[in-house]
Amino acid sequence: MAYDALRRLLADGHSPSVATLPDGSVDHFCTLSDGRGGTIETRETFGHDVLGDRSSFRFQIETSEPGGQAVNAATQLHALGADVACYGHIDDPVFDDLPFETVSMGEPAEVYAFNFTDQDVMFARHPTFAEWSLDDLRDLAPLPEIFGVEAVACTNWVSTPNMGAAFHRLGEADLPRVPFVLDPGDVVKRDVDDLKALLNALGALQDTFDVIYNGNRAEVRETAAVIEGRFEDDLDRLAAIREAAGISATVIHDRAEALVATADERTRVENYNAEEAVRHTGGGDRFTGGLTHALACGWDWEPALACGNACAVYYVKTGETATTDALANLIDDR
Image (cartoon, rainbow, N blue to C red; front, side, top):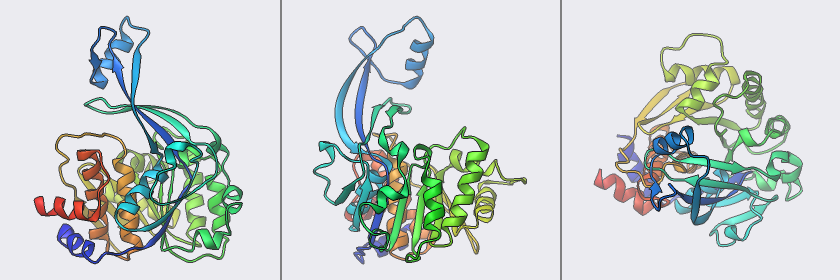
């Protein structure tokens, strides 16, 4: 069983070195008022009000927290014991107390997240990392120093237009061949040519790294839609993306399960039920952190997917990032 294997592996106390990059955000978690002293608790109610007679709303910021996909993945990696360095856009005091190494390349985005009970809604302002390039990273340290780790987690291609060009340049670099996990962000409704360019850039990156494309079900289906052919199921889609890009693996993270397609195997690991969710967003980033940790440790795919699943479920269920002890307790309880 995948989770039995994960439970044993967690006890070994691996501490791999990992780098994450390149985004960052200040996440404001908010509540929305209905104007009569009550709180709008569901996205459905909010949508009904927007389409109705109401044209203005009041909101209150409950907490402001460090965020962004690279930061969230680094937070999960650190909690599992990894030696992680986050190269992000984190020039803000909210990031000062992060318990792992941070190196900033500029200002973060600002995200306003409304935690409705049925699903979150987020509004974001993206500043400087829309202009990010590989040169910004090279200005911090030599690339062999940054990428001289046991795995890399890269995130938010959708908000970083120059990331494809960076991948092509990295594909020509003399760097250690390690797992390179990309969570592209919300590629749904992206231009077809953009997605084809992404697959091409991933193929170039594979010349240097073992590339893993990691998206949720909707993102993977959107990506597969630019590839010619008919697919019986999502494992077929994952295999088609892997083959079209020429990369090592393609992964789906989902509430119900995680799936992977490599050149040699197709694997599915069912997920735990999160029961009542405290947070609807951020679980995918914890999956990325858990998966990257597992790959950095050299684990097989079944416990690697189980690790990502368990990290995501624990965060969605509790609003907290899982440590190895918390994951062990979750597995024991289930």
